[in-house]
Every structure is written in C-alpha cells, then in structure tokens.
Length: 303
Image (cartoon, rainbow, N blue to C red):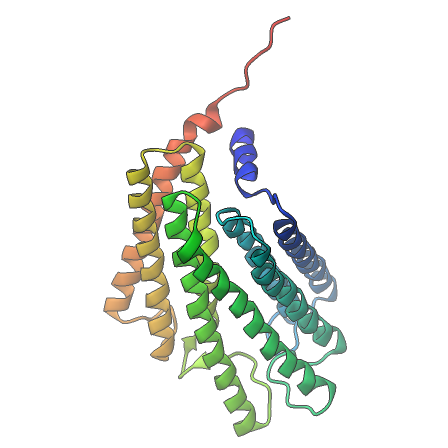
C-alpha cells in the first residue's frame, strides 16, 4: 500500500508555481473545512437549514478537492504562463467563495439568497459573481485540454468528461440559484433547501457533476501505476466515463422531474444501476491490477 501511495503522490505532486498555488489553495480550504467540522461538533447546532456549519464545511471540502484536481489537470498540459489564468480563477475564486460563505456563518446570517440590504445582499451578489469566475477557469482548462493535452490518452478522457461534468453542474447551480431566488420573492424567507419541483434533489445532482472529475482521475491514476496496453486503458476509461455519465444523468433527470432520488422512474433507476455497476466493475479491474504493487515488499539490502 505504501508503494501505491508513493506512486500516486508522484502522479499528482505539484511541480510548477501555478500547481503549487492551486495545491496551497486546496490545502487551505480542506483545513478550513476540517476546523469548522470540529466547530460544528462542539457547537452541536443543527446541521441543516440556511444558517448552519454544514456550509463552511461542505463548501470548503468540495472546493478544496476541486483545486487539488485542477493540479492534476495542469500536470497534463504544457507549461505556459497562460496557466496562471485558470489557476488563479479556480484557486483564488474558490478561496474567496468559501471565505464569504464562512464569514456569513460566523455572522449568523444565511450565505445564500440573503435579501437583507447592505452587507448581506452585497455578499450574496459577490458570491454569484465569484462562482462565475471559477466556472470560467474550469472552462479554460476544458478548452486547453481539448487543444494541447499532453498526458496519456486515458487521462485525457477522464479530464474532458470530468470538466464537462463540472460545466453541466454550473448550469444546475444556475437553476438552483434561480429557484432559491424565486422562493425568497414568493415567501420573503430564505429556503432551508433548494428543490426542483416537489422533491427533486438539486444538491445531489449538483454534487455528482462537481465531483465526477475526482472519481475518473483516481481511476486514470490507478491505470497509470501499473499500465496495461494503451488501448485497454482507453477502453476502460471510456467505460468508466459512460458509467459516471449514466449515474449523473439519471440523478439530474430525476431531480428536474421533481422526484426524490430514492424514487426515480424505472428507466432512470435502470440507467443509474447500469452506470454504477459499470463504474464498480472498472474500479475492480483497476484494483486487481494494483494488487501486485500493494503486495510487493521492498528489497532487503544485504551488507
């Protein structure tokens, strides 16, 4: 296991100033999420609702992992000063967004959909603008990956599908914002949770789109540790990507239909099960290939 972890670290270790910047932004965010998780336990207040420690924790961890994923993406791209643009937008934007969310929780105010004039509405407006900058950074990484990708073919599949998933989740986030704003206009209150229709789980659909890149990146890294033939790697990554896309599509369509994710239509349930089974099957194949690396013992040096 130590050998696998060592090789995995070599595959994601930041090498350039741009990558180190993103890695430090990610570390800062993950540390913030961990600290606020402890605060949440000590405070023992509700985990759900418009004012909760859940938001500083979940948003920090999600954006932190996104920043770390961007490091891996940049490692597959040519060294260029242009890289500072997506790196700055993703890393700096993530830190700013989480900073505003965290500030509102410490102030005892809702971070999202807050209509109060003055500081609260200004922060909500700024958050909406900053998240667009993060989306722009992801979009630049996507275009750059399409034009100048230098990593293995399997990694290219993972990067492109993962980044497209993040772009789709941005669209879902836009709909979530519009839905939440409509609730505020209609009721005058900040919604505890945003739902599409009656019971559509907008948050789950949003989360799946945001974190598909990490799932596919982990598989791509695993394939690179003890690589089979390039064609086999690409085939497995295409299968994994199709499985992820099937699960994501099923959850998203179910959410937009106003149904809870636990009660999809028969077609959407079959699509999700097929996608999940495919993902698990590919993960099992990759894990089996890694077993010789995990079980390998370091050589004993005789003196």
